[in-house]
Image: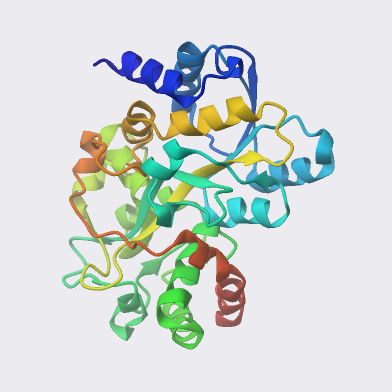
Length: 337
């Protein structure tokens, strides 16, 4: 069965409503990847539904939805982290979805307890290191706090949602006190004040400014697949560790979405989310953007598969969301800039 046939078969199974065969879908998305164009065009080819898209910063899109209120034209909100999708839910901007397709394909720990949002792709947040400088790389997130790594660690700022997510996960696993002690010790091990994005942390290893860095996997996998300035040419000198393989597993960030509370095209919105959970779309999250699929059993692109098999942290994303405020407080108290 071809990819195109698979999409059409799923589209036919989604619903018998005429809305699937025609109409529009209004999408607010903080995914900023040009490769997603194929996702939208193939959905339109399969269903006849035109995708009208507004892209922007997630906080700005949430503020826009709030301001628009019941008159908002948005049908689906997509974002790239648990923090923002949970905030949208807490503000009453999303609605519950009743979908057998989503329930069957997206694992329970990757969806909201009230079915207001679902994860569709994942990125492991792991540790990278300079092979020439680090003989004994950290094996766990907790190891980043060890005195032996003083002056070696590069990591994102406390305002970054990825940083907040990993700290919130550690709060859930270890408790607030232990997570707070960890954060203070990691700050003491910084090679520099936090700056830049994940690619900048990896470039720091290549430049020699950092010996150890934390990054989402897809930034590294992208540099394996194509040229990334300041990284790809020296990538052979960078090693990686999937942390905590003997206990909690490697922390996962997600890209997810939900149906807007006042969606004027709800049937089309549900159809779109179900399409994102299809094998074809899931494979493209990996092939097009070097991410891990959310749906089990979907094949990985070569750049992602090259990183190896690992045990992910299967903590419920709702547990991470519940600890974001504690994480923010811990980061501030630790002096994490």
